[in-house]
Length: 481
Image (cartoon, rainbow, N blue to C red; front, side):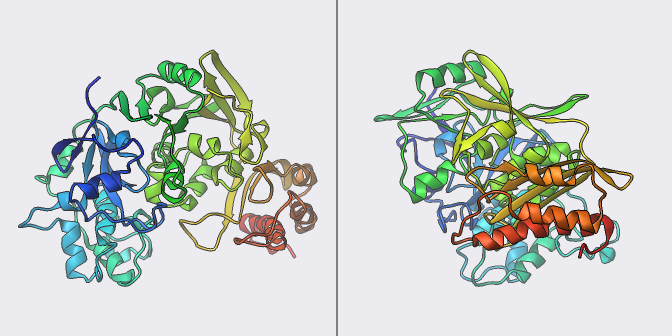
């Protein structure tokens, strides 16, 4: 097996002697690339953003912005990274950098390199298209040049203010044909390397196939399994957690398939949320509502459904949606596979039916989908925040009657739950203000919400009832009471 190496700004370098837990951020800064900054070490500020070459949706390669503070550098063995320093030459600024400079988008400059990298990822997005009539573009979150401002939702600025940054984003043009990073999109990204990186008693391992990985996990049931490392990276940085063995599954082909069959959609557990969003392209409206509210684009570029479900967190955003969709999980180990309804998956706080050595291979969503769908996330910030309460609805309403109701809840119990009593209160009843008010009272009593720093139990209960009233207003245009 060849020594672990990484290409940074076009130059190949060995990962050694970095420890297996060393982040991309620390690796880069130790090499003198100090444009990459550490702000929060949790993936919430974006000062550490860099570009990575990944499999593309519309072109062979996409330039994807990720949080360098969360990702182990060993996870990028054989991969290509571009930092803010690599975007320009000493003589010529990159177009994104140029616009940030002339429009006053930088003051102290601490956050600026991260903004530039996130902005560059959107600049190079192959399907970004300018409006035919820029003067008619009135959407404050999408520029006349087709720039999606959500690309910057994971970047914080504490001194410049966001207006000049937005002005810069909405002013960038189209990459020139000679732009080397634009031309690079026409070539395939590097194949993921099988990695066996060991230093002392710690190891970072990536196998080439799912079977090899499952055999490894049978031998090492103590191993920490990561994909985007958006959860484990926080544990490493903030809680100084270390693992004797980390196993990466993010590039396993068997975990990166998306198939639409006549009776279900199967989503690979290691596909990133951004990849799922772009490949489904609105095919599952409830997931389409989830994605913009799930953390930030920087996080969604690494986070996976497998990881969000694997942590077993009661406040993960995807479980309520997948519960409302009646999803099931395909669990795999060295002996084979089994399918488990998500409603039966969680057994306690951060506990599940998943056995040692078992992986989530895929998520299956049955078809057809319920036509009325809504995901409501109650949090202190509009984006890039942890939910206080999350509610997902999937309803079949025919001739004014609720024929079927599925409701998933997060943040109101030790696990994500189905609101079974509320579903029963709705099914077979007319979709009227009276029905909604009665069901809202039932929904307020679902779960066992608690008081914590995010919200009180009373507030959480009230938000449950309000979420159903809000859905009623959305579907009928009539206030429920």
